[in-house]
Amino acid sequence: MEPANALRVAVVGAGPSGFYAAESLLKQRPDAVIDLFDRLPAPFGLVRYGVAPDHQKIKSVTKVYDRLLADPRLRFRGNVEVGHDLTADDLRRHYHATVFTYGAALDRRLGIPGEDLDGSMSATDFVAWYNGHPDFADLDPRLDGHTALVVGVGNVAVDVTRVLAKTPAELATSDIADQALTALAESGVRDVVVVGRRGPAEAKWSTKELRDLGELEDADLVIDPADLAISDESRAAIADDPVARRNLEVLEELAARPLRGLDRRIHLRFLLSPVAIEADASGTRVGAVVLERNRLEARADGSLGARGTGVTERLDAQLVFRSVGYRGQAMPGLPFDERWSVVPNDRGRVLTARDGEPVPGWYVAGWIKRGPTGVIGTNKACAVETVTTLLSDELPAIDPAAADPAAVDALLTERGVQAVDAEGWRRIDAAETTAGAAAGRPRVKLCTREALLTASRG
Image (cartoon, rainbow, N blue to C red):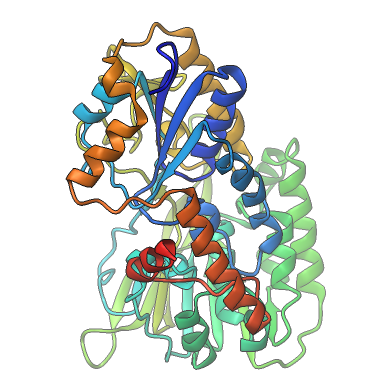
């Protein structure tokens, strides 16, 4: 058993926020003993299943997380679904505090006719599929169409666009899932049209992501210079935003480049919103998208919003990927704000409702705390704030026998849960990287839960 004064903490979600919360706890409370849970057998969450497969430099942050997994005070327990395998009452009984960091995995919908036709899908699901997420191994997107429409101008939209436009040779050196590599090699997509509801000055992509679109081996980037003419209001709105100003400069540079007559084309368009998706002759699959031209109008808070003008155009397309944001989901027993799709909280301290009372011992960090904003590094400061709040509170007492880490393991075994520990993850990692080395790739991912669990056993 652990020392009687040990602080027992559960962290639910082994993505960046979960690791940063654990790191902060271990630094500030050397007596902390942490169980890091994830419903998937492999850790790293968004980094493993959300970051683009051709962005290996970003994924190198997992080296820091792996070092944390080697700390004996931190126990990884993958393949454990909190809310199902472990209940809210279990958490209260076995831990002084629980930090929920399970993110915002659901996508936002467009809310337009035809959105459920075959060929219309969430960019979130598509990203998970090509990144080897076990829940999406059977997605099987229809990539035989000629034109794909990507709705949104954030980094996820750019990632989807780049993956669709890259050649098989460009993708073959990444850790993209094998089934995706095969399907994309046979893809019929030649035109990818990216639309944003506001103007180029309001696009949310990073400068590097934007530049990458102009560096593909076999895809021309098509931008009408006239679409880059922005209003005085837009220019004033980005006066203090160096990233937005630089992005506009890069767009102008890219628009001035002569087209090379390559096999694929990426079209960037602005001030357009899809208002309907039409079926093809079969009546079941995407055949075209109706787009409405927008204009920018000042909102009450001074920002610029898009308003439809009633002027529409029709674009023949066989695929539609919506990339218009994420939303969190409720977990059994945990308060949830349906309007904002977050857990109501005060500096990470869970509240019974938006203006409610604190829930003793429960905390949140990451996207489920603040909404889907920021980049991977943003989660560190967010987690530190939550941990600071946690350590300032008087935490509930728990029975010393329940505080024994072996008690949780016994409970999971009793319920037939095959939990994956850090050593099991190292076996998975070794299997993937060994297969990757043989193929000249960073790793060959195991893309089903069964394959991951088998590898974890060695």
